[in-house]
Image (tube, rainbow, N blue to C red; front, side):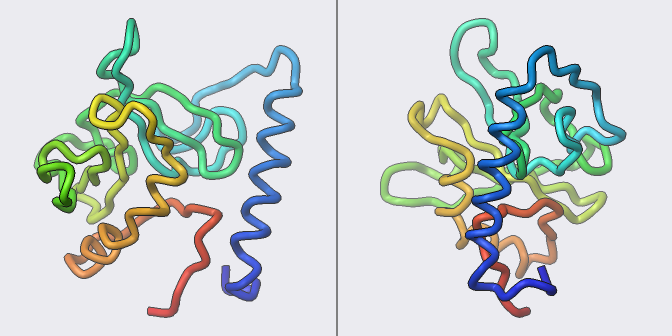
Length: 165
């Protein structure tokens, strides 16, 4: 990020996402293999931007991570930090709003005290029409709160220009 003017970051991020998504969809018989870490995309190797908790059919209750670059989704077990792989002490934090109580919010952050990181999770049972990329962008207040609490986000949203500390 530091090598690119902040005003260009969202445009470059969008262009990269379109190019990689097109490549992924147009590659026949693409062999996906698990990455070295749970948070690593099996298609392009980029980090997960967020997670989605499905709510229908055989996928009900399963967590899928969403790639920050190619938008590929892959299954990862729930209640496990995707960065340090521990499950002890995980918390789920959100901001209360006019439509949802904090524990019923469609977007919550899985916070890991072991590695001081967080990953946003989108619960489709609470908002079936939600989409991870836009939900992530619309929850910057949650990012600010978690940063103030000492947690760090380890994967980017390529449509978000980073600010100064």
